[in-house]
Image 1: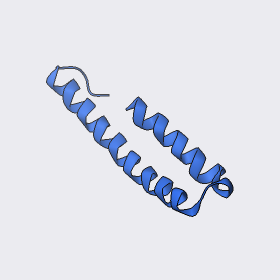
Image 2 (image 1 turned 180 degrees about the horizontal axis):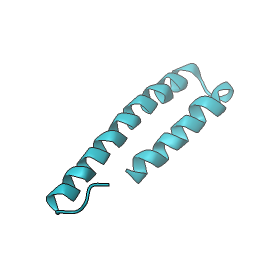
Image 3 (image 1 turned 30 degrees about the horizontal axis):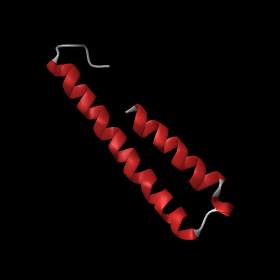
Image 4 (image 1 turned 30 degrees about the vertical axis):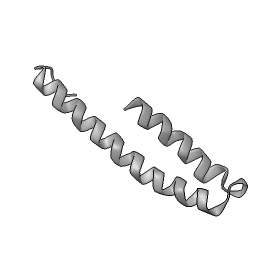
Length: 60
């Protein structure tokens, strides 16, 4: 989850604050990456909840 969060922060910074310095195709890729990384972050969180449940830990 931490990896996806850090990647999302980097992609967000590049896509929104460095847009004038990047080519259009890269900006399109970065914006698509934001959606994909958000989905992967959510999937990782669900896997974490499943693992906690199987270990008998409280779900947080």
